[in-house]
Image 1 (cartoon, rainbow, N blue to C red):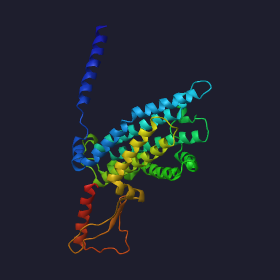
Image 2: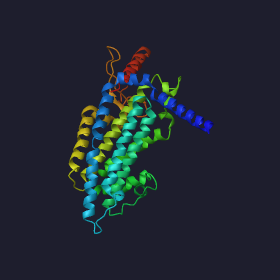
Image 3: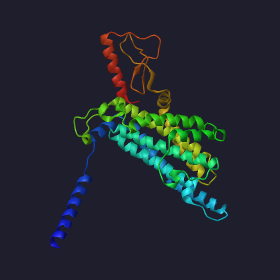
Image 4: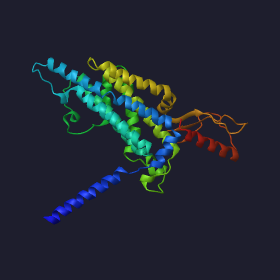
Length: 337
């Protein structure tokens, strides 16, 4: 008996020690400090935006509650299943969407770029499910798809996308928005499925423990920054469209207005980056000063990190000028804008 109690005591002591150790755990502090040093405004923008969106919880809950009450009042049996209510499921999905954006930001700040992109894919999947529920409701299909029943996760995106596109007659513009989201989903899948060029170890080979990374690859940061902003922008557009076309409640307007405010902020700060990503470029038709004689060199960098000159007339550079040009491009990429 004494030995048994002693073993229990040792296990408890061991657990307490481990807990204290974990409380002091420092993960990628150096790389985090570098990211915040070089790009403080960007991370502040994302944090502020996600905090504002997170404050919608009260409105989303009240919106869902009023919908359930109204549904009960119009039901002959005077009851309604919240698990099948469109607005209740919209609440769950919307909260989960922004949880994944928050988790992605956490990974982003410590240089886990591939994992950031994988989490963004989750937000896109949930947005598809949100609209799948909406389409079934619009077409009079009883809301009993596998996700609502809790039997399985998101179904095939291609089939779901086609189903949602059929709403274009009643919700003009939804077809184009969903097709853009489908294309984005395909890009994000490369990280989720560990496509070779999206892996962290390809971009920055490890010379230390993965928890003590000391450096990051600026072009991969730029890619992750672009795809984060673009994903947030696309998801917000679809959330605005979703809630604007839901049944009327007293809480619908502040929800839509909050989404619209965040869209305006993204357009104000990142309009050009969003536009370029839509065209398939991280950097699109920019110029760099090479020497006093050769100032303009129009170049682009696509989503696969390929350097391209999208002009018929190419600028010819000698060996010295090429080195200067490469140095200028590296400095431009490190700028992160």
